[in-house]
Image (tube, rainbow, N blue to C red; front, side, top):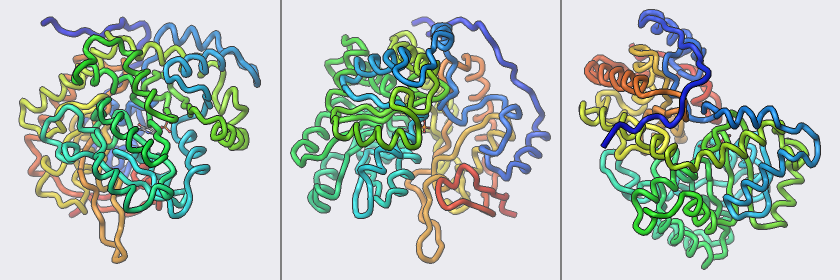
Length: 457
Ligand SMILES: *Cc1c(COP(=O)(O)O)cnc(C)c1O
């Protein structure tokens, strides 16, 4: 088989500013060993996130020029809303400035003390919005999803037996929603099978609990279903996507992911009553229901991006580029989550750095080493992001200690990815010299964004 090429040509370029390892060591120190605090111009390859970092197409840029900025009833809103109705089959579409704004509105209405939101794995902003409402978020990931090194087709699946047990234990009335995240971002960008979504739907219907999809990577998930699930190999992606959404009562979406937009999001749902409540909140904090905190041009870019993301040449290239990096790292013995996820490669920091205890944040230490060695910015997804303290102020660690190398959409070429593999492998060779980190300052919620650390010793 021939090389799968990037299915685009490059019309506009942005410079990468080079620096030396010595300079980067100083930059890291000044950023308190938190990659979020590094200036992006000091980064060579920025794999911090795939969120809002996509390259837009010439069609999307043309849409930006055509965007209609009317306060109410803009044609750009109807383009946006019709596109999402067509893709999801859901009639009520509410634009928001990004995914977490959709979450904030939804959980302010449905959340509250004594309630549980049950998921395969909640993303960090989703969990934070649930907890901010006073409710609790519960992750019920399938057994395969707990073992980063062991390959399986659908490691993002929900444990349906655990879901049934949880509903019976707590009572359906305490569970306002079940939420399936596709693909499972915090669980390694791993896909959820159609079969699993169907089973969850059945359980939800039995107990009269609505099912929502956190749809940020719906197209990447659909590609995995096409590749790996029986009966889908010959189905067009929009058909698979449509089926996936057909099992849900609603969805939240960040258009900064599978819509190739730099900003935006939405809520979509079947319930008119819920949509009314959501719109009432939207008007207070986001904007009028036909723009919801977005410019008309953003609505255009999102509408166009949502169609482009379902093109098969794109999805084949996208998923293959993640697999390509995964294969190179596996061949060098680097512990990574397998198989590759949809938008990112996840290094298993616990295995990478067995000599660094979890309360010294091995994932963060690894992320810092990748920056110092090669100017690669990544993010820890482990005990720094998800750790809690017990009553004795002792760390309750996360299940996994991962470092995510998120690949922005349509931004980097194969030689950039080759360089990333070389840097990771060099760090791996010198891993025994690496040290852990200690926190010197942290915020009460989403601490990883602003936390300050220092090396131990
Ligand atoms: C990014 C993301 C969100 C939040 O969206 P923002 O646009 O960043 O607010 C929610 N869920 C998942 C799975 C995500 O990846």
